[in-house]
Image (tube, rainbow, N blue to C red; front, side):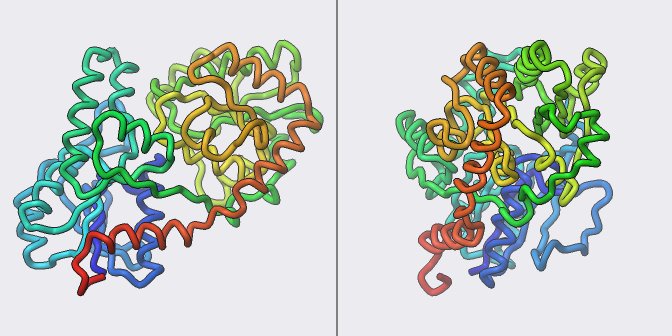
Length: 379
């Protein structure tokens, strides 16, 4: 097939959507489908550059307020209409609901090209964390209108499929997520890195990886760390990532280790060198970092939804606590931090739980879903 993938975020931007969409694009390419990525142009872009044989169609973009380094695409319906008339794809996947995503959906429908969307981000939940709670129902209704104009909407968990289906989203289909278990592995544990963090050999390194933003509920992870430190004074909390909340947290808590953005094997070392992973967010559609932590042999403490519900099981690979129950979250973190043997057991089980999650099978499933929309002669 000839497939167009539309996303307003793309690596080297670091977030779950960018990395997931890149993985889907590469997966299609590995199956010999032709893939063109439609995304905003960045100031440092070389328009002729390519990513693993992926074509690129760059449109104008602008900086995302309060998120340095992230951009969104400006409306581009006319350009896409012309481009897709000259280079018509067999199917289109739209990963983001911003101005570029809306333009792409309108252009695809006008050209009669089969199109599906991905539900990657709970923008309705984000409104609550930025003082705009009154907008939440309006944002959700807008997202429903957007996705219902597509042939199908892909989601990463059965829980989310049921949630959206019960609220008027039509044609919701499950596309599971996977993790690169070769890249994220306990073998990357690094005693020298732990020493740089100031963690003693017999003390727990508490880890969080992700974007440092208001909607990520990081203050709860800090509360859990403080409870752990009250019992285990040599424990350290290592925060990997960057974002608008970093300056505030770093100024308020100089005792925490801020490791900044990490990539590739360096990121894998940071995961594997921890002992316990805290994931306090309540706004995720999935939570890719949960799988990366599990692949690295870390037990996870998270709320009972998204990736945690799908993959942790009942205390098999960590501890799931009732959604938004912050006291239960702190208690679970303290319980695991205080029990090294149980941490090791759950970490080993976490690794075993996700070893069968194959990126290749997800890519094949994605291709099948696109082919089910595409004209028979293309599929």
